[in-house]
Image (cartoon, rainbow over all chains, first blue to last red; front, side, top):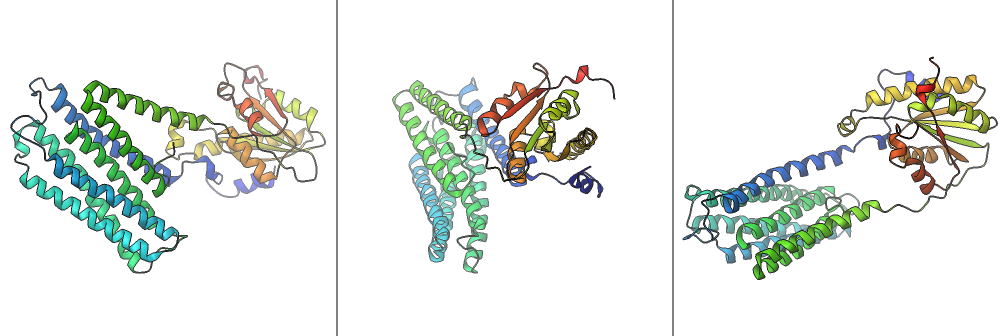
Length: 203
Length: 210
């Protein structure tokens, strides 16, 4: 019997785990998160598809007459959100170079742009000219854009925590997970908006 | 194509790619609806192809630097670790060598994804203990440990722990009953590691009852 084998029997339970044998908890958590998000957005996109394409009583135009989507305003909002991804990228790249001022400026700008996006969306809802009770198209419109807006709100909360910590002197070139992870989430939210804007407003 | 969730920079590049791809789809669909659909399908297929191609790329063979000392034989075996054929092969090859046995903690996919590997590790430890006892009884200088469920990873881990080896002995079930053979594990070990690899087939159904 080897020393290794004897050591394994010296304690109760299974032998110590080989790190590479198991799924990394962080990887598993991220995969479960992505899967849940994909299913959540997927169900809303499926509803949009049914309301727009499969529904036999759907009109040939989208949205049905006499309603119109504010494509231009949403386009400006898209530019705001995409710009916020650039400022977020700037914030992370800055802290990687130990440029704390750049990180703080990037985070503040990203938060301001995110707030501008949400505010513009709220104004758009107020002036869009239809409400959730005006048909399946309206329900799917508010459902998809509202679901995305909720994600922007979560992203803004994460970025606010990161900004507060940044102004309190946290993070360095070696340790900046607290900025990096919200950054990944923020880009994910932007990617989802590109899909939502394209499918709901443009196509 | 990289994992967009690996880092913020990767996620940012993924966002830029998404903007480019959807711009092409929108322009295509404005020209003709079916053209937009075709562009979407082509771009999706291209992304899938890039991803699969990247995953399929095999790394170059690793040159294994062996620390000076006694000849060392690395044995990687699943349930066949207690097989007569493996014992006979090791008697032939490793009388004057140090034998290091790695028993991969074989697990079901579901348990692996749930990180429920305790039963697999207990079973592998039991196999390893019985195997080491038999090798010692046969007069061989053997020690061992439990390895990763992936035999390639198990070999790589063991080579790092040992500081190299002179040869690898890989034991599998016969053709038709071996998942490792079906997955081409023997060929993969030969390709990845710059070491002589001996493949031993153990037919547990023909073994005498213990």
